Image 1 (spheres, helix red, strand yellow):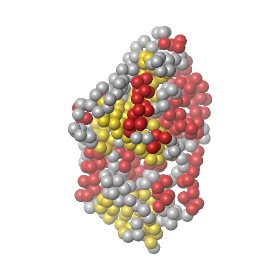
Image 2 (cartoon, one colour):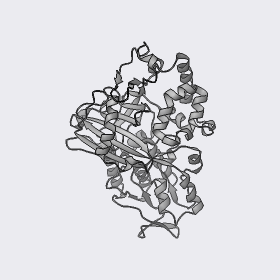
Image 3 (cartoon, helix red, strand yellow):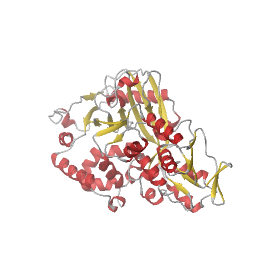
Image 4 (tube, rainbow, N blue to C red):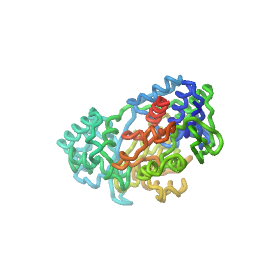
Length: 448
């Protein structure tokens, strides 16, 4: 068969590889100048490794990408332990600041009385031992919460999780106070006004896949992307970059793209919103209408290249402080050695926002000016004059996993024969990631 694959991220590349191995004639179309999709990387002057535009890592519980790497002969994936922590406002718990509860916790209190009088603390939450030392919950609360987390970790997927929200489930099983301390701000920072509507499936999936060791690609994810593109070319896949799909029309038993080349089958890995716009002449309005009920947030990622790190030990810092309007800070060079980036430190500062949010229109300097005072709250010694500052946007990056999403998300098989969909909405209930992009690509290739 002559097959068109729309979108050159890991889903499109994986599907192209396995279909070409079967002997199909495959053409891969990508709008950007390079393949990679959300995993695409870039290099700054003097860097030896690529860096992703948005924070990327693998979990040691994710096998699909490891299997794909083995199939294509790529060997440069490694795993290492990292530290995950959360930032809390301690002023909300004054009885703890002078007490003994914080003994043994390695990171210091962050004090910024000149601005809002709030003390902040970075608290590691990587292990059961860390959780038992966690000072903002009582011992009975920690035991109860720990039992629920263990249940989620080893529980199979239950229909119960789709019948209740994460907030309702966690309040009922762990208690109101645990919800307020551990979870409330995490959900608000990630999902904004939709936080109370997110299904319990989301928290089940996050706990199930949580891992201490994280994986990365030697040279950055773009190295793997470039290697995979070489394998596709060797398999005679036609790879077109800088090619925007504007129209798809049904022509007999096949499909015509941009009013020119014809194909027997099409696989769309494009975001559902984009796919819906270019397939108006193919699909019925009732089919497309259900996708209009899906909601998304857009990613805004500020990358800072600095001489000194913002975080001393922590790789991934969840911001559980309502007065700091940042979702996460990821100190990449506490994960990957700074020697690959000219000896400088790399940190990601990230948000999910709605399309109309002011951040979408702000420049990198404006974003830096906005977040610098808050970074100083996280690290009081912070006085940033970055060597470089980069700003990237990821459209439709975070789906809203509510009841509408479950009822209306796309599936591989569509009402039109030989037109397939395999996009990152279908990673539900798991958070989007490269591993699941590979999984989708392999699965959709098995349908043809």
